[in-house]
Amino acid sequence: MNDKILIIANGPSILNHNFSAEIDKFQEVARINNFRIDGFEKHIGSKTTIWFNGGNQNLKKPNFYPKEIIVFIPYEILERKEQKVKKKLPIRLGISSDDYIVVKKEKMKEYQDKSKIKRPTTGFNSILWAVDNYKEVIIHGFDFFQDSKEHYYDSYIMKKISNLKIMRKGQKHDNIGEKFFIQSLINKNKVIELSNFLKR
Image (cartoon, rainbow, N blue to C red; front, side, top):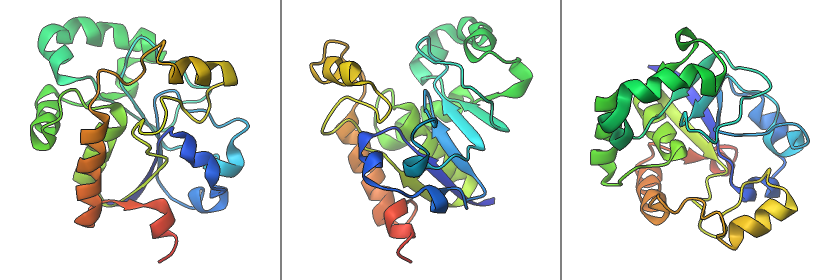
């Protein structure tokens, strides 16, 4: 099992901290879906070694590809049309199928069953995957869409649209359930928030 991983999510709370130097010291820094670094370096650092994504149609190709790419396709989608979705992935990701790993259907079902959450988000799945693969899992910027529907990188207009729920972001996910489950992992010392990790 690997040593430690820092997973940086896309919640707007991340802009309340300037942890750049501390973030870039980690050997493994993972980011999620349509993360953006340009213009946000002082808050989120510049290092990325792992890209977690959901392989969905709204995915934007990154400016650079980290050494490791892990794809979490929801179990219900794999159950219905696994081959069809996997066939589209190289186009959506912009890379060869040899350059990324799709988490197996059985493992996706295990995450769903273990948490009792139907169709978990990519961020949630990334934490469970990391708990399986690393001794220490540190997280940062996970807001679980509690106070708003926006991401730290959204434009002013996009934030307004998102929060008016015109685009209904996150509606297919159990955000409260995810928050409580991750909090239970924090309580069991299986996951630690970056701000608490840095106080040690």
